[in-house]
Length: 208
Image 1 (cartoon, rainbow, N blue to C red):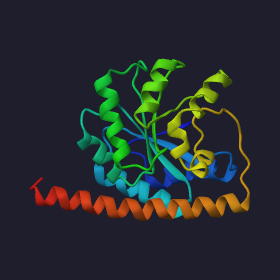
Image 2 (cartoon, one colour):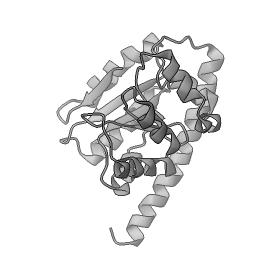
Image 3 (cartoon, rainbow, N blue to C red):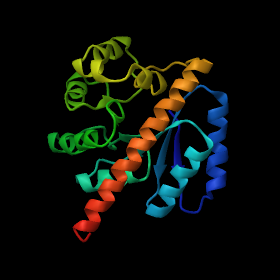
């Protein structure tokens, strides 16, 4: 899985051009971006908006395990469609899993991912919190195990088609697929604008 590492000294035009190559290839309908600490909040919002302006593609943010829901709200305010949490050692405490699960209150079901090893106990803990284990699993039995979890019946089948969670294979997308994806993205973007507005108003009213 390719992750676009966004640095503060990288112009948006160069980043968008690099993403263009992936969009043209058509192999994936999502991108994963990661911001360095020197990228300001304003620049993060601007870049995500710029990508959306040029491409109909799902934007997933790779982020470290947050300490609180406040960090998750900040991530959401960038305008991303989903979030992908990853720890250096791929090990999580129950407290960390619970904090990450707070993202499911903001993002659509099926849009919160956690990088995990092929550990069924951890995979179940992630799924039980309505998050998706996100990795290129080597064993097909693991993918089958994930798909049988009750949480999966609640996720849009279209969304799972565009953002694979463990299947390491290329997909072909028809013109109809692209139309459906555009409608889904527009719905997600509109919903997100309303929610970001509510979060901003909440912060303003509390004096933050």
